[in-house]
Image (cartoon, rainbow, N blue to C red; front, side, top):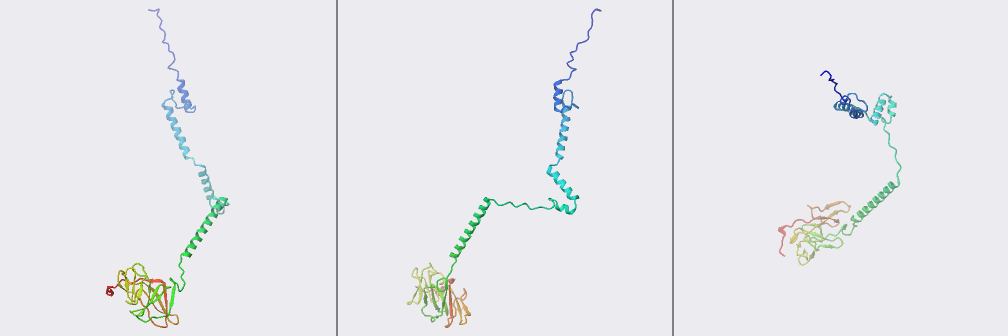
Length: 275
């Protein structure tokens, strides 16, 4: 029993040496700084790197851009500079941008636009000039001057150029009756046998004053505006919608304006006669 020797246990040293691969990886991740990194490169080193990354991000966010720094320096210079110098600074005294010369494309655009506008304006003016009515005295649409006064109840005088009948109405007064029937626009005629106006198209009938006395027309004949002037040229009377007949007197001048028409009044049932 005494001859048996006891030897200490043999250790291979595997657990005492740090893992070189993990250490090198941790060193590369933290830029060679292994402070605060565990030998195994585990969680302690990761948290420290996160803190440094957050600090770097905040410092970058606090940095100002170049334009902001220039604006800040300019504001400070304006605050400390004298009044005359501050007004001379570009930011304190805005300047107009220099005008650029017109190029060929812009010139052609303006030229074509101006020419087109001129043509359109001339065309519009020419259209208005031809469309605007221009009536001369003595033609339909213009003014007719009469000095004759038919006797009361006599046959009306027909004016072919003016398209009206000049009559001394039974109600007492002169009237110029438009030669178109108020039913459907036919030309009526004066009948000596019956002493009234009759329409050959549909049989409407009107008395010497232009009042409707038989249908199918539903209103009296239309009239033109008549203005009466004395020998001195002063107006003494004129037809209106409420004043249909003007004074009938020799020596007066009558101006019949065929461009101004008074519509006939609604038919009066009391004037109706048998055909």
